[in-house]
Length: 171
Length: 120
View 1 (spheres, rainbow over the protein chains, first blue to last red):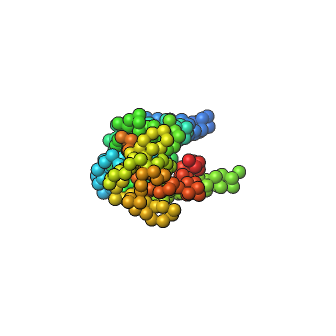
View 2 (spheres, rainbow over the protein chains, first blue to last red; view 1 turned 90 degrees about the vertical axis):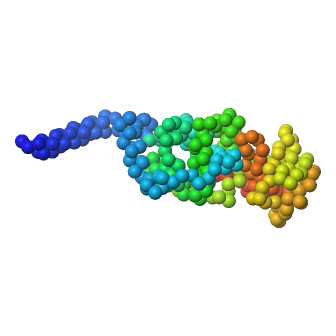
View 3 (tube, each protein chain N blue to C red; view 1 turned 45 degrees about the vertical axis):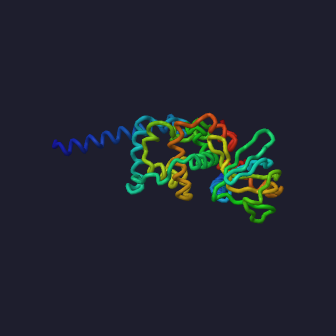
């Protein structure tokens, strides 16, 4: 048997095994949005998501300076529109996110903070397909301010959290 | 069942759209009495505290639903101020209603839909 034929047979066998495994999971377990994605799923999904942002947008840098007013305006905007899923501190510990598949990530962690300004902007404006993240559209300036606030989240003060609670009533 | 689900989805999507309407991005007003006036700021007694209200070139003023000016604000006036609180506590004013908000205005300004359809 030639190497090429062996590779094709191997691929078919693997596909069959994967199909059988999937069928077994479906029969016994089904799919629930309350589960957490496996590491493999998360790895693949994050790489696919990166492909969703056009290169020209991915390379954009935030045109706004993180002035106290711009960050504060975005804080109120985030409290009003985003915190219901992402939580005021961006950690994602909310009742809605608990049942999302895939869940919204912790916006303070290295993976999210490692996204470019352009990627964060694109996620806010265009959303992420097959997830709970809607494409909000909106005005570019407001979306760039939200990018500033996401960058600020790891340094969010208790006082700022209180101000957000005044806006949305969330802890 | 399917009809109910569609109606719920429609209402949810409508509330998301309304929630992102820029004209509704005002939040709740801060109300109080002017105790001091300066070129770039006001001091407001809000009952429980004293608040510094910063004014800039984007701040607008209204009295009884008509445009007004910063010079119209005097110590002793009651104000409703829409704006953004800085992390340091000062309020950057976007809209100052001299004489306070009319009753129907208050309800119109405080409403700010969130994606689950609640009103604050």
